[in-house]
Length: 458
Image (cartoon, rainbow, N blue to C red; front, side, top):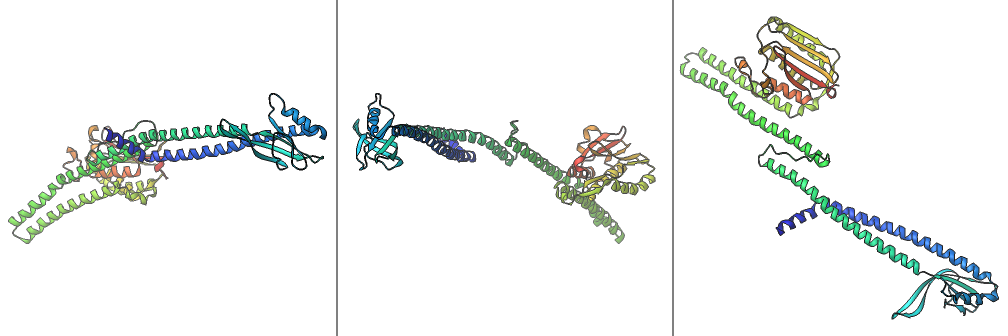
């Protein structure tokens, strides 16, 4: 238990939060020292100015007496009971003390002197006195002073107060640093624990969000978004691996069977040629599937964002509609088109073209001949909406999210050619462009909504 506590305390002391608290404590101590010096200098300057003023006033009263009466006036002032706050002395022209308690004549003007007052409580008593001296017309020097004990006491008080206050502030800052470091460590350890669980294979692990909206919550939201993306990609990769093994087994098995049959049964060059043609068709089917997978992977990696530019969506869609109109007429389909003009979006023109082609191909290949198809592009309050709709069998609601995954083919589509990657590519391109993709019921048939929000608009 003791080792665990010591390790916990050591972790706190090594944390960045505690180092920041120490720096803050040192900074506060520096600020407190600066404040003390400024306050001490201001207070001392103010008190000394007050002392100088009172000494000057008292000096003026002393010299106001006639020269012959000054000695007597000083004696009376010194003899007052209780003793006055001032010190007086009168020196003759030879610097000899005539009367007073300042024993040594100071220099003319303002000065601070130290005077030994003898022993008190076994120690020499030394007084510091602020004095003003000036030579008078009779040649004598008048000196008036005042004890600096009050100033020294204020110095001592200020030093004591600021010292203890500074120490208390530093200690509180360090304690606060420990508490803050503890909170930060708990949040960091939670993130590290989630990362460890993910590294151990638990892709569902997430960083806890406290709901405070602080920087850790913002980090948790970002990390959780990243983890969800990673989990989706890993699960997609796992699904792709399984689906590739399942869906490519059939054409490869057919190719092997046909080649074996050709080896055993073919008796002419023509028979071998036909067997090879069928094998090449199977190989092409496999290669097409791999090419589609690579396109989806490249789109999902978001590498194509670098090629984004202004795309005239209205013009692009009109060209595609013109290309597909003869096919619709050949199959006797009613083809309804409503395209608003002048609509531009920001994106990759090739990928958007592929997405729209896949949707139109999906409507053609998975609905009976003669089934109506409609295309509508219009502006909305949020941006632009593209709707591609058919009147076929549609997709059951519980299957609509599943058909956007790779290799997913509903039972009704098993008999038609394809690899189950068309809508998966549509979903990948829509996600890359930030387009809201939704599959809905056209009653009857399938309605595909593509919402280009304002941020996709160019």
